Length: 188
Image: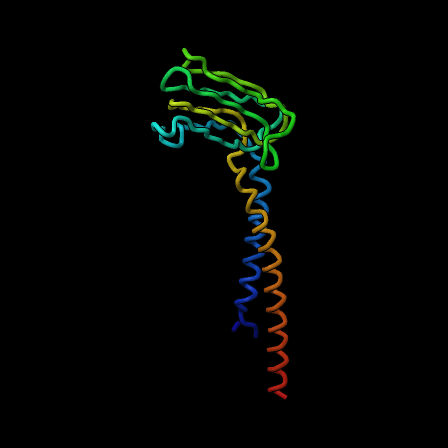
């Protein structure tokens, strides 16, 4: 005990929760705003094609991409034909109603590779759908988005941690006053 006061563990825990909460809120709101060029690579289909399963549809959701940003797509098939791809704006868990795909392409019977680009038509996530019919593929998508977009999910954890820390400090002060009153009563 220095200076007549001892370190209270609950107060330290409360202050630690407040600092952690502020840090989580900062990280989950600021880092998703940081965007720079990204490239996503994928091999598919995600399921083995057999005699009974002759086609498969893979879906990907790209993080939020700003309006009028270029998306570059390279899709290479193992065999000719049998691949289709669509990229469409996506919000609130579904493709945006009334919007046309920015890329909508199906391989001809003699095609095995496509490289194309398109500009985004709105600020949103983008839904990528690849239909593979008896064919394997390699997909590369390049654009500008935040690699930290998934951090937004932690905002609620941070918002919960802040009041929890404040509540613990409040409770610690009540206990401290009670202990102080008890010590004064024992002295008198």
